[in-house]
Amino acid sequence: MVQPLRIVAADERADAKLLDSIADWCDRFTPLVSLDAPDGLLLDITGAAHLFGGEAAMLSLVVRRIGEQGFAVQGAIAGTSLAARALARYAPRSIVPPGGEAAAMAPLPITALDCDDRILRALRHAGLKTIGMVAARIASELSERLGRSFVTRLRILLGEQEQPLTPRRPLPDLMVEQRFAEPIVTQDAIAASLLSLAQSLSGVLEREGRGVRVLEAAFFRADGQVDRIAIKMGEPLRDPAVMLRLLRQKLDALIDPLDAGFGFDVIRLEALLAEETNPATISFDTNENARRQIGFLVDRLSVRFGEHRVQRFVPQDTHIPEAAAVAVPAQDRDFTGDWRLKRAPGDPPRRPLRLLERPEEINVPASEFPEGAPKRFRWRKAQFDVTRAEGPERIAMDWWKREGLTRDYFRVETGDGQRFWLYRDGLYHQIGAPRWYMQGVFA
Image (tube, rainbow, N blue to C red; front, side):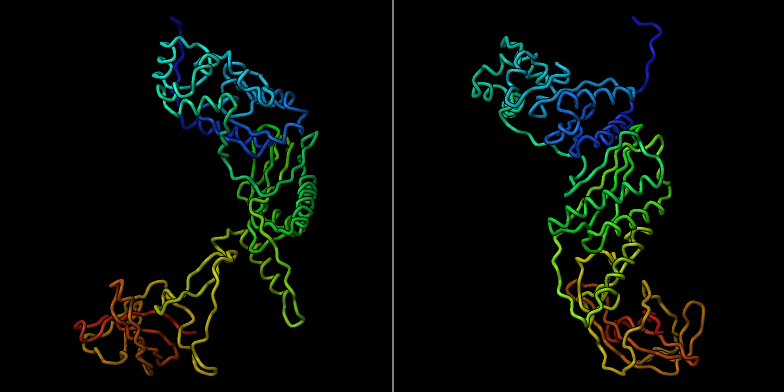
């Protein structure tokens, strides 16, 4: 009927990505933005409308700014998400006062209920054409014929029941932001804004006795793009100078530098995780300043290279050598443990400084399967002659897991002074010819 008609294949993934980018842009109005797929967004503007001149001005601003980006947009404001959704589609630009949802929804057609075709056919068959006519019926009658979920949905539409939104991003514990009449583009202006925001956030943290562990900076560009950077600290922090230094360290480490484009009109700092800080009594004998410097160094390295690349070892309650310690991010304080000295002062080390990631099998001549340590062995294509040996130190595996054989460990020294930690896998009465493995290398 319409020629020529241009047909474009639907791309649901691209549509979802586009809707997500629009939701990012809407974060400048409120941090509580929920997706109403496939073509809608829900914004909880409680306590935020006065920042934009009231509800009417805010609705007009949001609709106009999204429309300027080339989208066809309709919006409405109501006390519940379903009511706002129905009004945006069937009575756009509506603003319902508190408690006025029932009156505003009454003249809307039953298609605004957004129910399946079976329920709509049943309502039409009963002669119900508007939501007001449906609401006038007895709730028990509707529940019996159409189900309890329909009655619940109707109560939410009429403002009689709440339905909390599911935000697409976790809400921050604390948040400060700065809006600019004219977008800023220079690095000095951005740094000055970040410092001012960090000082404001520090004041709030100071009053509440808390410190930030995870901090995120959001940069809202004038063209709609949003850039976010997040940093994590090992301990609660509220020093604005340190916050700014870590943020700048993160910005300098970005593969794609922060592009201001036409400028940033909003910059926001969010404390995604804020924890209570307990003042500690520091004596003159402790080196608290050194500990803080080490913590700050760990934070800087983690910000620059990634927290998963800066690790520390924590002890594990096991006697199996390769499982005696585990590497965790150095900033993570949830893993604690005390390293116990297993040798007397003056004794040589019982464990090597370097353990191999996996024990490597060594070649012991078939003619020599001694009860003690081997006289010579080949490892990594090199031949080693043993001149001294200590052992065995017998370590049994976890018998309840039925994994592995009993090991006999030996500390051996070669003629040129190299010291290794070897073990024999299995006992002579368990297997015929045991295998030998290299576990570690002494310093």
